[in-house]
Each structure stands twice: as structure tokens, then as C-alpha cells.
Length: 329
Image 1: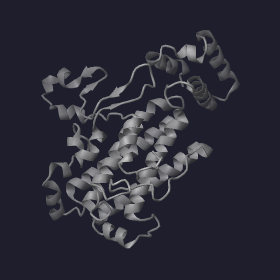
Image 2 (image 1 turned 180 degrees about the vertical axis):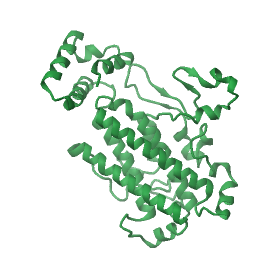
Image 3 (image 1 turned 30 degrees about the vertical axis):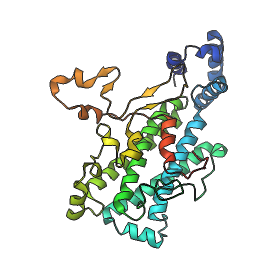
Image 4 (image 1 turned 120 degrees about the vertical axis):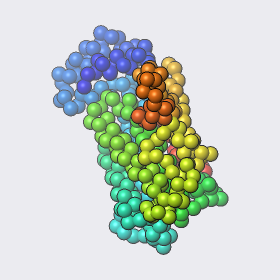
């Protein structure tokens, strides 16, 4: 872990970082002493504590626990979705869940059960990592996956009775998870172990999203009839990866934010604006312009990168499925 490099990166967005921590000379002295008195594995955590203390009374970036607890909220949301729709991992299922399961091919159902188990494992891991700092699991009635917020069933009223609707909501949740983990990664830089674990979960969420998208394109039953039905509408037949802003997603009125731009709050002296998934500029270079000789469409460049989403935007998306009045998100 190169502590001074991390401080240097922070300085780019917060020129007053040394004043917040201490004088430049003092912080170097403190960090040098820390390295002598702590085991190497403990230095990242200790450095994270220094940063958290320095920014505790400011609007600077959240601490490691804040980021992990927000990730835990998303995992609670996703785990609840799959458990409510598919039944428990031990095979217990209601009549409604059994009927939904019957609407998927054996291959797709096995994949969905695997995804459900992954989300449950993510919850367990994050709770373990956070220990006593972990937020409590939400009440069973916290979520309304129809999008009706606990009132009249919303636009996804058939989410647990129609396989196609279930997959559409699953795609929106998984695509959000991919961008959310990428948005939170920079704030975990003070702890390589935690950052590595979070990026591992990020990659799993990406595989989930790809598999769900493939199911939607081929149809829930994965046969000729369901594939034809799925292919009649472009919005119901996505690629296995995000292309451009995906036309706003499976239900643009509710899911456009999953693929659009997002502004982070003023954690730094300036508000950070994250580009939408249609972005073709990386590292300050417009790839479509720089590689114009290849004659690739803009979609090809946008498909090559995932874009991050900040906490406020992810929270707004998640609230689509939380009952009105809940303080969970």
C-alpha cells in the first residue's frame, strides 16, 4: 500500500488534505511512525481511521464502513428480490413461487438459483466484514418489487407471476449493482483487502447482469416460442452487455437512471459528475475520434467500459422498490 500515493491522489481533488490531516511534515512523521509500530496488515486500517477522523466533520468522502454498509443495503435488496420470487435456498416455495419457477427452463432456473445464492453469500460476507458495524436486515415488508411503494401495484405488477417481468426487474437491479460497486471502489482504497473483496463482488454482479440479459434475449423458457416473443421488442431483447444507455433499460420511465449520468454530492470541493453508459471518452480521450479509422460505431466504444454511479443516484433507483415511509434507503 503506497500511502503517500493515496494522499497525492486525494490532494488532486482536495488541495487542503494536508491541512485536514496535519501539517505536511507532521503527517509524514505520523505515517512513518505508524509503519514501525503496527503490523503491515494493520497499516491500511489505521490509515483509513486517520482519514475518517480527518473528514468526520466535513462533507468529504464516506468512510469504509459507510461504503460497505451501503453495499450491504443493495445486497439486502437483491437477496430479498430473488428470495421473494424464487423461494428459499432450501427448496421451500409457496404456490406463487412454484408457478413462477415453472415459467423458466431448467437451465435458466438453475442459473437464477445460483444468482440467489450468490446474493445471499454477499450479504453474509459484508455482515462479517462489518461485524458490529453492520446495519440490521430490513423487515420483510420493506420492499415492493412491483414499484408501487407499498400502495397500488406499480409498473412491475406481474414481477412475481410473469417470468419476463421478473427478468426485467432482475436486469435493472444487477446493472445498478455493477455501477454502484464501481462508484464505491475509490472510497475503499485505504484498505486493499476490502477493496479486493468489493471488486470481486463487482465482477460477480457483472456476470449476473450478463446472464440475466442473455435469458431475456432468448426468452425465459429458452425455446423457439419464447425467443420469438422476446425478440419482438428491442427493449425486451438486450445484448448480454450494456450498449449505449440501453434505451433507458427494460422500463425507461423507471429504469433510465440505471444507465444515465449521475452527480455525486460535494464530497470534494467540486461536484463529481459521472458519465452515462453511452460515454465514449476514457482517460480524457474520445475513443471514437481517436480511433476513427476503425469505423466502429459509438456503441462499440461504450460497450467496452462500465461507468460508475454515485450513492445518491443508486439510492434513488433503489427507492423504486422500497415502500413509502421506509428509512431503509
